[in-house]
Amino acid sequence: MVGQHRFKTKTEDTLFPLKKTLQIKGKLYSLDEPWVMGIINTTPDSFYKGSRVSTNEDRVLEKAFQMVEEGARILDIGGYSTRPNAAHISEQEELNRVISVIGSIRKVLPEVLISIDTFRHKVAKEAVSAGADLVNDISGGQLDEEMIPTVGYLGVPYICMHMRGNPHTMQRLTEYEHLEREVMDYFSNKLAECKKAGIKDVILDLGFGFAKTTAQNYRLARSLDYFRTIPALMLAGVSRKSMVYKLLECTPEQALNGTTALNMALLMGGAQILRVHDVKEATETITIYKQLYT
Image (cartoon, rainbow, N blue to C red; front, side, top):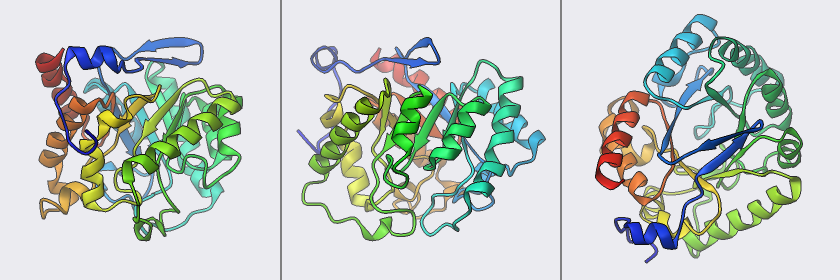
């Protein structure tokens, strides 16, 4: 039932099998168990200060090494803060913040997968040229009509998030007649658009915190099984977000425990990739999840 969480069973996994493979630059990866994506923000104003490492190469590499040691399979590099009402920066400034960083990580950590967190097709193209393996677009191509065709040309997986408007307007665009159905329709259309562009692997992100109220965020969190019929991997990004810290009446810095609890619920609902600031805790959550449910 939509909006009502149920524990998965082996029978359900047979009836609604999750996609469990990802093809990246000619190599096939198996997601028989969930992955962790670590967040590295080369920004001065991301909402959680613990994720900000600026563009200092030593600090970036130290953070990258730590995350890989703690279990991250993907490092998500972002140079444009998408928190509500964040400052706008130019395309060139975003390029300056991420391209050299990606190149440095690729040199010293050749096996780790790198994702570029951007809604601009030129940034995506330059990042993949520098060594990125995936494109993570909060706008699903809505903020740059060249993004999806560019990703198809690049031949890399695409993380497609649900959002309305942009970071400056999204908090005013939370009216839905039927939340789950409208999000499902959005992804159905985006999958068709991605297929037409030649994108072979799409990862869905429900967009927790983007054009959704706290109540709507938790409604979607309870409804992950509704989206399991979509032939795509599912990423969940709730790390230290307002849906956690506002509910618990704390700050992002105090929201790790709540994030961990919510991540476990999302894993039980079918999330296959956790996008987090705190890799060690997310890896431990997956270890306990595997012991309980696999």
